[in-house]
Length: 203
Image (tube, rainbow, N blue to C red; front, side):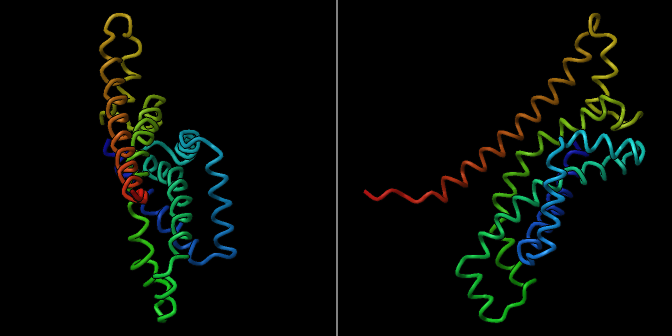
């Protein structure tokens, strides 16, 4: 869970900043970064992480680096779309007309207005990140002994499945329940935010 949380936080911050900068700058930079994002999104995150870990080596640092490289793209895509929408609003145009600098507009007006959807998306992505870490550890590419991990517990308990099935059932249930709980929390945050933004019906 610590690896999933750390990599998710780094991916969210990195992807958000890249997306907002691309939305504010536009032009060649925006086009190039979005095309790179499209290429990385075309492959499953676990496949990209497996390739990077196999190339860079198996240790804690390379595992975090591989998960960040394969996980920043959804945040960049979402942050860019939200930043483009916010940048077209009147208060951003007013700040630009008053002569405010682009960094000031980005951090003072754009970033606070895109944090809500990004936080909800991050909570929804935690379960996916946790399953990815478990899959890599199950394949021997993730957390290495003597450090404990649910994925490596599944791999270690597989030979004893018929005699001691709880060695596989309990780590599997831990991954499933944790991923499902965090995902439901993220969906609840997103649903609550959508209901607040929905205009009230006139009587």
